[in-house]
Amino acid sequence: MAYWLFKTEPDELSIDDLAAEPQRSFLWDGVRNYQARNFLRDQVQLGDKVFIYHSSCTPPGIAGIASISRAAYPDPSQFKPDSPYFDAKSVPQTPRWVAVDVKFEQKFARFLTLDKLKKIGTLDQMPLVRKGNRLSVMPVTEQEWRTILSLTALSNQD
DNA sequence: GCCAACGTTGGC
DNA sequence: GCCAACGTTGGC
Image 1 (cartoon, rainbow, N blue to C red):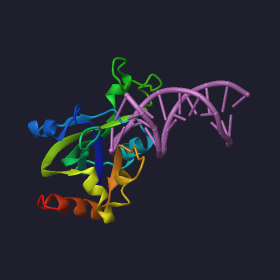
Image 2 (cartoon, rainbow, N blue to C red; image 1 turned 120 degrees about the horizontal axis):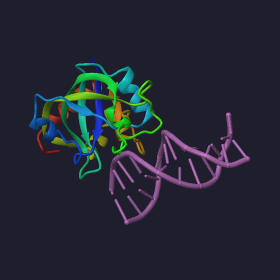
Image 3 (cartoon, rainbow, N blue to C red; image 1 turned 45 degrees about the vertical axis):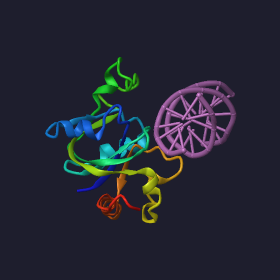
Image 4 (tube, rainbow, N blue to C red; image 1 turned 45 degrees about the horizontal axis):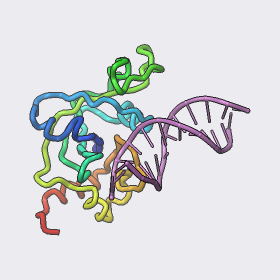
C-alpha cells in the first residue's frame, strides 16, 4: 500500500463531492502530464491512500483522504472530441492517458492549507511545496503521510 | 488578472 | 538534438 497526493480544482471535483456519495467510485480523469501519468499507470494500486488537494482556490490545501478503488485503465476522455481532455493523437489500440477510480475515505476536520504545509520543515522534500511545481499526481512518503495526519489532529491554535 | 515556472512543440 | 516560442499550471 502506497501513499499519494492528487490535485483537483474543487469546482470540478472536491472532497465534499466525494463525501456526498461515500460508496461511489469516482473517475479520476484528465491527467495530461507524462510524469503524473507514469505514476498513475505504473505505481498507483488498488487500496492506495490519496490526499485530496484543492488547487486554484482560496486557500489551496489538503482537504481529506480518498482511496484507490480501481487501478489504471484507459482514460475515456481522451477519445471524446467534446471533452476538454480530448487527445486527437491518442488511439484506442495504444491509449496515451490513463485514469483511476477513487472513493471517499475522510474529510479533514481542519483543512490543511498550503501555507501551513510550507512551514513544516520536514515536508520540504514534497514537490507540492516546491516553487513552480505543477505535478498533479505525486508520491507521498510514509513519513510525510504521518506528519500531515498529525497536523490535522492539532488544534486551530498555532 | 498577473506572471513565474516549466512542459511541449516544431523549425532548423 | 537544440532551443525559441508557445501554452499551461497554479499561487498570489
